Length: 152
Image (cartoon, rainbow, N blue to C red; front, top):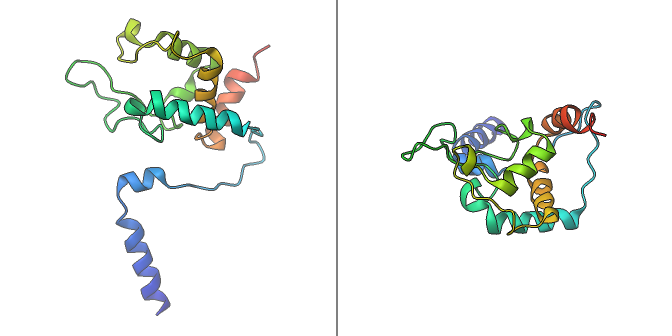
């Protein structure tokens, strides 16, 4: 009987759609080398609300990006990438992330409009904090050690 329950559970889990897998919450124990994160929950809430209002239409409600974000679309431009730690956003410094949001990507052949004038610096930081909260501890630690630890 236990084997039947186990096999049924495995089949049910295997049958989940990709969308359900992307929205699953994974609880991880931080490794001993992880950077300790301390989030201001009010900032996370503001960032999440701003992201849903302004960014989710392209980047997805969970910052998962578009399905073929690595391939140019019909207009020859790349679609919105994931910001949840599964693409390349974590390769960029905080200043680069802020600059990309402020200036958009039209100037470098992308589709993202500039948000300077629509979002304040504090609001942009709130949005970044929200999507960085989705990064695994390992990704955040690499990003932090590469870009933040060396900053003055």
